[in-house]
Amino acid sequence: MTAPNENLYSLFESRFPADRSRPFLEIPGGKTWSYADLKAESGRIANRLRALGVTPGERVAVQVEKSPEALFLYLACLRAGAIYLPLNTAYKAGEIGYFLGDSEPRVFVCDPAAEAEARDLAEKSGVAHVETLGADGTGSLTEGAAAEGSDCETAPAKADDIAAILYTSGTTGRSKGAMLSHGNLASNALVLHEAWGFEPSDVLLHALPIYHTHGLFVATNTVLLNGTAMIFLAKFDPRQVMDLLPRATVFMGVPTLYVRLLEQEDFGAETCRAMRLFVAGSAPLLPQTFEEFSARTGHTVLERYGMTEAGMITSNPLRGERIAGKVGPPLPGVQARVADENGNILKTGEVGILEIKGPNVFKGYWRMPEKTAEEFRPDGFFITGDMAVIDEDGYVAIVGRSKDLVISGGFNVYPKEVELAIDALPGVLESAVIGLAHKDFGEGVTAVVKVEAGAALDEAGIIAAIKDELAMFKVPKRVFFIDELPRNAMGKVQKNALRERYAGTYDSSGGR
Ligand code: AMP
Image (tube, rainbow, N blue to C red; front, side, top):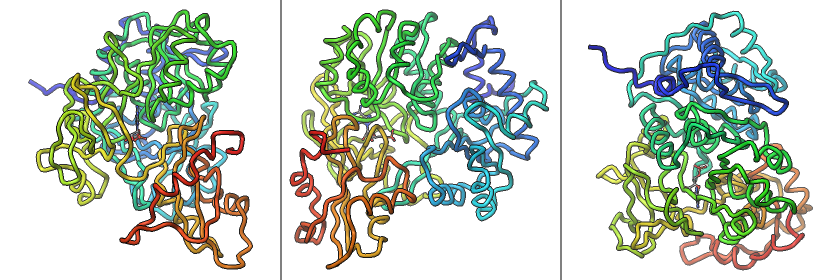
């Protein structure tokens, strides 16, 4: 007897609707792709990747705009047994150079406008092939795929084989590639599909980027398991979302998207009349957003908590109380506990670092065995780095981060990386980067800088100088100048003191 294929695509395919002409994707303007189209298009692209010499386990790095074809490329990588490596579209050349050098992909798929730069970077890193894919689905990748047949055998895979690598920002400024296996992704998708009660009549309105775990895995994989349709938007635009919500039943967003919707005066119960479920996560949903959303629409947002390394970890219940400021109990199959820095397990109600274990937890950081070992306890629990408390009902609340991670608009920014970029500017002596409460973004990246006496540096100049080097979401929204950074006895910059001093920066129109 042959072992079942544990390739994630095979699981999806086993759940596709019997009638393959049923819709999978629809984009504004009415163009649709059925499940039969999904199969044919992903098959052609998988065959093209194979023709380029991609073999199972090899990486395919992708930095492209969101499009149906980009999603088919993800599925094609699964089918070819390749490791899908999506990159944030905001990353600049310096960052991409690092990812290509570190992951050594066989193919790099980029936006047509970035082709010349991509070829240059690919050559330096020894990447064999550069292909292009534009926002409208055209480019060398789809041209090449069009010449291929659509029949494609899905590569055999074991649950432990790596399906994707997603880079997370590193605390030391170096990004780490989180290796997620077919089994990790399958278990999390199955659990969420069940926990959130997906139904045959569901239609998901997809307005998230697809280079991040939220839009790529949480939203897309649950729909694929459900065999139903999604309305797929290139970007989040509150007016467009409001126009389409009456045709949708499920929406997933980072908290910023909910804030944006609530800014629309005419957003309310009428717009949400067909909706079954609103899910929020990737950053804390402020209790006032939760309350206002409920008052305006009659819907209680379901907040869940997760991270790149583990997919979804906890979720407020579908049936049962959804509590503002809490992220719910661990999902079925996931164990969670709170411990101190040394790994001593703390009691219910005590604040400490959240540690987790389960089939969703990643296989480690790409080519960083030591870093991986540091983040796991001997009994297999992963140290999330999030400060949390678990109450008597088992609900988890995330109260902060043990490291100084800033989350702005749902994107993680590790201060160290931004500090290094600022410190490299002529005239800068040192800097500290902190996150400050921001109405729209959750937190606003903020720099506090000490400069040489007489240095001709101003706020706009510093922002302009690092804009070319760092993705926009990492660039500070405000830069303050200081004579001395406050430090403790150990010489460590006291970021808490800075956060207190500049608190309220983004309370009014003063913040950008
Ligand atoms: P990422 O790997 O980009 O998904 O970021 C993961 C981090 O986002 C987690 O470690 C948390 O710090 C944060 N996060 C995700 N969801 C929530 C939530 N619902 N509440 C608070 N923080 C969250």
